[in-house]
Amino acid sequence: MSIVELKNVVKSFSGPQGNIVAVNNLSFQAKESGVLGILGPNGAGKTTTLRMIATIYKPDRGTIMVDGIDVLKEPLKVRSKIAYMPQEPDLIPSLSVEDHITYYLRFRGFDKKEAKKCCEEALRSFNLEKHRNKKPFQLSTGLKRRVQLASVLSAEAPVIFLDEPTTGLDPMSKRNTWELIKDRIEDSGATILLTSHDLYEVEYLANRVIIINNGRLIAEGTPRDLRKKFGKSVKVVFEDSLSFDALRGELMGVEGVKDISQVSENAVEIKLDSIDRSINNLVRVLASKELQIKDIITTAANFEDVYLEILGGEI
Ligand SMILES: Nc1ncnc2c1ncn2[C@@H]1O[C@H](COP(=O)(O)OP(=O)(O)OP(=O)(O)O)[C@@H](O)[C@H]1O
Ligand SMILES: [Mg+2]
Image (cartoon, rainbow, N blue to C red; front, top):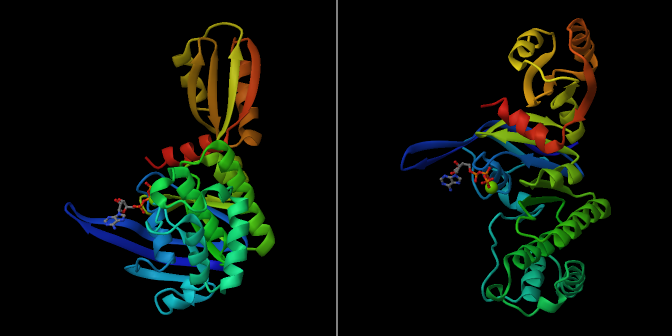
């Protein structure tokens, strides 16, 4: 079942240079439990989308449902189901770390005793015990992120928004955070909408991803599906140096070949539609030439390559 559902959502802002369409007819769904990764370049509309689902902005058009509730019709009911970690640190200057987490939980409906107990657990899990009495001005950027995360992940919200939660965290804290996110989902079956520019993080955490560019959906699927669909290439190494232009001319006509680039004086990288279908055509053509092949290597693109290829196809 979908717990978050957007249909034809549009949001524009008026600025000095006229109207900016930040979100342009966007539709997608997040299934219950697990992480939906939201990817896209700077300014793609990720934060604007999260803000609309979290009832901070109103969409100009379209519908947004959270657990079957319309965000425009019953925003307060939606707010009781969500916890939102904004991209920018939003700690209250006068509150200590401990007070911040406790107040956050009290605000989310925990009673005093529960909030205190839960806060202690959060301070422990997020390694914040020795910082408990510090105010935001005494905290580093990464520590502020950790306080925000500790608050949001401890609240028992079924839908959680994390807008670039690990930006600025050191590698150890980052990995610790990933495990805490995974634990949170396993313990409670929460649904997390996560944005990040760390493709490794998204692939590690997300069950499904959507990619947004200029406010539009350009791809969706599991990280594995996207890897399979895009980013197939083979590297062919020849015994001798080659005349690239002539070879390119020949191979670009082969069915399934999308692009060829020279990677060294005797090697080329060939992008294919599908390894299964196209590699046979390719080998047949190569064999009919006088070229001596030294090696053929199929390269599994990493998720970042796949992402860049999907975006590249857009430009
Ligand atoms: N409050 C606002 N007023 C005017 N324009 C805005 C406002 N918020 C966002 N925008 C514009 O809307 C577009 C989408 O911005 P958004 O913050 O949603 O992008 P993003 O995908 O989150 O980017 P990033 O990866 O940099 O966080 C951008 O062109 C941005 O300048
Ligand atoms: Mg953003």
